[in-house]
Image 1 (cartoon, rainbow, N blue to C red):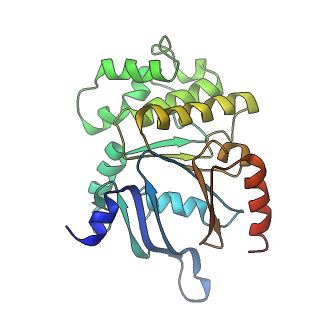
Image 2 (image 1 turned 180 degrees about the horizontal axis):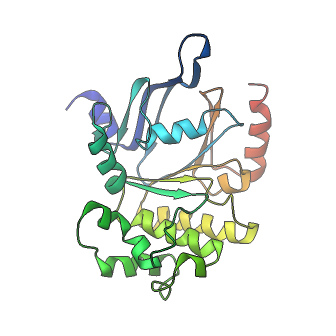
Length: 250
């Protein structure tokens, strides 16, 4: 095992000198610029930065949704470089969980079927007991037969969290998970994600613009102009907001 693999073993996610450039020549835009960082297993990381800082590109490259121009990403014990599209699809389906601002549930499927969807897509039997257990874990034990349109926004986001957990992924990526929710409901979803980390040792990486949301994480990594711009451990809303203000100076 090479040194890089040994280091990766400590991390659920490892980025090594990751650069992502869109376009070429004069029109080239560097969205990520030589980013190297690791996310330890069993931690909750928030990623923040101003608009255009590279947050979405960071998430897309980390989750195998996009390929870096240079550098490498290791998810769990698997280097993503060199994998073909079919292999990346399998990685995303079985080893990555996603929680999006817009929930991304299928309205034609019941709540239980939405949670079991990764297994259906893989062509494997859906573990119904596990589906029920995950719904119970997110406080929706009696909602399996309902449809997304019958649920509140907070309940739909809980379904999305259950679906993200069902395969026991290396990392759950949450992209502005409270962006469409009111303050009270958003706080409940954030407490749920915090509980997932504390209870199961799961790893969560959350992109957010909200200092209150970021305060639920163990640490916050800041991006500015595609580069790492510092880290804040044990964040509070006030400390996060103050650091975000200073990013403009950075």
